[in-house]
Image 1 (cartoon, rainbow, N blue to C red):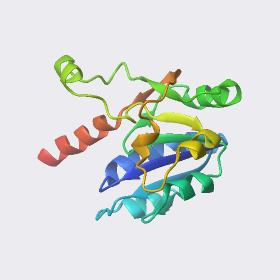
Image 2: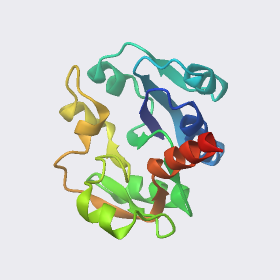
Image 3: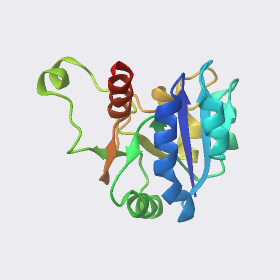
Image 4: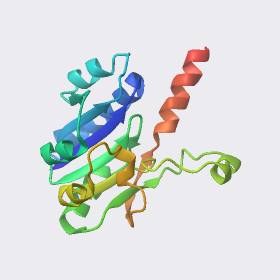
Length: 178
């Protein structure tokens, strides 16, 4: 079983996109629970999380969050990121044979422009992070942001792609201009 953990701050639309993409994983029995760690959102993020059956935490300690996860593996995502392709099968297989953390492959359809890739460093969770709860428990510290789990970790690459969160954020900003 897999626990999904995301941090959010005023990402109602992006959160809805990610949660809707994860429904297939819940239906297949892969996703056991979703935990949303909120940073004082003033939008409808809590309502979106509640409608999806996710746990919405406004005050948390990272050690307690990791310990409370129901899954034996954790998938850390940014709000707005969406797994694509055969992600359910890839993760299920990796959870049975993998021992080290893993990330999704970058989306071939959604790439930053060349110059932006050169100048801008990718966010630590841009490709997500899959790790065992045991590994996460050893890393977790009080007051730690979710992105610190991904910093400086040797990881494997999953065959499935992840549409990064910046695509959803860009789409929302483009829609706001119309």
